[in-house]
Image (cartoon, rainbow, N blue to C red):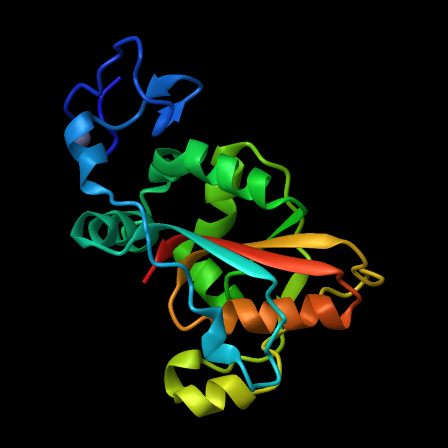
Length: 209
Ligand SMILES: [Zn+2]
């Protein structure tokens, strides 16, 4: 098949590394694949020490660095709505969330955004990865994080709550989102799960921004 990113033949050589493939077939060419760089910069959970959110996340992993090829990918995927691009990282996402261990919970997209974007870019990554997941969270308010400074983000009440109709969350959970930037979204989501009884909450994001 042709590379989902540049349209050149993606190749079908035997021995292709088991990354960037869809059921064993490469979905991006070597040149595009080589543009993505694994993140060796773990999310700095210690930023949250001393806040009410300390310890809410028991661990976090980000898969890729936010370099130019990744910015371009995200722009095409999220804002140009090229939903087929969710397949690019399917295998990597599947491996990471499975390894984290627990019920997979995507960060919900704001309902207003969902309407304008027409698809949930977070859910779609998981769907393409072929892993089961459950929507357990709702946004509590239309507060936009962009308007909060660092101290406000860390002191704010949780931006998420357990979805109506779900009675407690006593298990182990893996939150999934596209970006880890300040960690606010994930810490707030983890707090909602912990308040509902979660024993352990970890997070996986595609990108460490
Ligand atoms: Zn390509």
